[in-house]
Length: 91
Image (cartoon, rainbow, N blue to C red; front, side, top):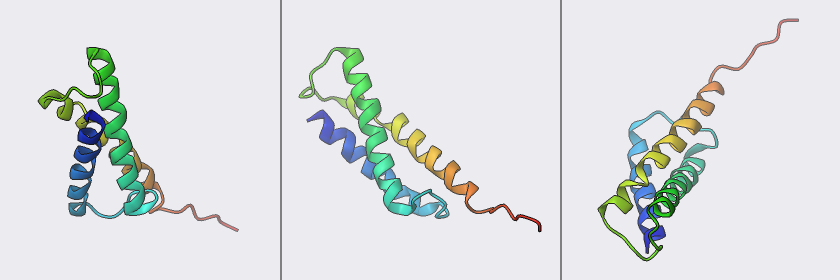
C-alpha cells in the first residue's frame, strides 16, 4: 500500500509543474516518470530505515516521498535547461 501512496504523491506533485516553463529534459512524460520514480525511491528508503513493511502507511509515509520527487524534477529541469542554449561552433 505504501508504494501506491508514494506513486500517487509523485503524480500529484507532477501536476504542479504546469506552472513552470517546459524545460524538462525529455519533456513532460520524462518529468512524469522522474517524479514517480523519485518519490518511490525516497519513500522506500524511508520505509526501510524505519523498519516498517510496505503495507504500513501513515502521514510520514506520504511525506517521505516529497524530497525524492522534487529532487528528481529539479535534476531533469537543470539538465533540460542546458538544451536551451546550444553551443555554436565557429568555422
